[in-house]
Amino acid sequence: MSKFKAVVFDWAGTMIDFGSFAPMGAFVETFAKFGVQVTIADARKPMGLPKRAHIAAMLAEPHIAERWLKAQGEMPGEAAIDKVYALFVPLNEEVVTDYCTLIPGALEAVAYLRAKGMKIGSTTGYTRSIMERVLPLAAEQGYVADNLICADDLPLGRPTPIGMYKCFVDLMVYPASAVIKVDDTEPGIAEGVAAGCITVGLTLSGNEAGLTVEQLADLSPSERQALHARVGAKLKAAGATYVIETVADLPKLIETLDA
Image (cartoon, rainbow, N blue to C red; front, top):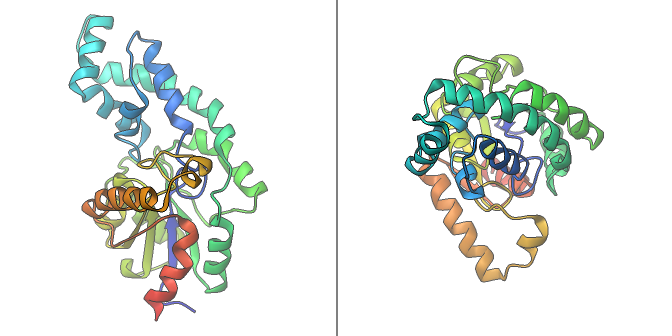
């Protein structure tokens, strides 16, 4: 048994979709439909936020707002956010099924946690409609969490702790210090911090690294370490208690913490 009662995982970049690629093309394509050019880097910057808040953050960027003004004749406001969101969600629903492969080591980590008697929770910046496409594909590969909190399930999402509080209730676990939140993004780490959890940031499988498994394997040891350090610094600044490379490293960390 472990002194920890549950681990709450993020999804994309944490348990599925190595490098967190699914939303990227959908953001670029959606903005293009409004005559606004955005880059993959623009799309990655707010990653981890609920998708409507993510779009709002992109539209708040001065260079994107200026492009919107030029293309649409007015500065972007709530109506613009709603228009982009309405187009984005169906696009993301379609593409997400191509990016549901479990991250190497995810199943083994879950088996380790189950053997320790721990519950498995999950939160995501994805909407419920997007996750309805993801869940069966994850289950086919052997991953089924004990709960799921989506971006549109509750009035307040990341970086507030409300989704984590719902996890505590769903899983019937307390105190917060007995729960570990694992995530690859700053907003996802922030929701764990706000809830009072131990937080573990993932440096190499997620949005900040933005690499495929193959691209990561091509890095030299020094390049890999430099990337781990750079992303780790960002996640620690967001409040991560610990940083590891991928979810595959979680069992070793928990062994150390339990010892």
